Amino acid sequence: TQGYSSAASDVYKRQEYYFIQQLVTARHKAGLSQKQLADVTGIAQSEISKYESGKGNPSLKTINKLAKGMNRKIIIEFV
Image (cartoon, rainbow, N blue to C red; front, side, top):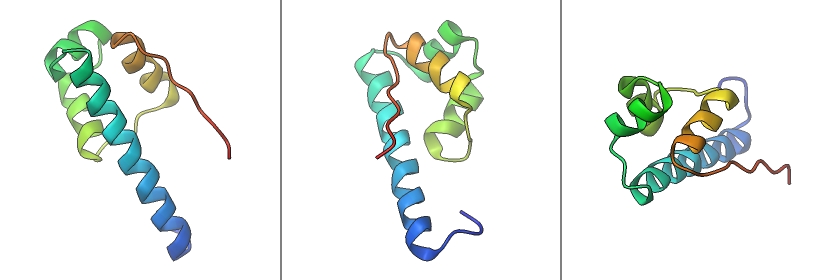
């Protein structure tokens, strides 16, 4: 959020929180633990933990891997 105005920073934080919430919810709905998702995707459980706690910044490629591992797809919108 460095370099953003206060309003832009707030929007960024809300979007980040929304992503984390969606990731955790999708994993729970898939009935997977972080370890199980790690096994399915090849992404380390420690990395998944970082993403879910807001301490990691996954690439679009990684987000797609996570989605596929939960039998989900991603949708990106510019609004």
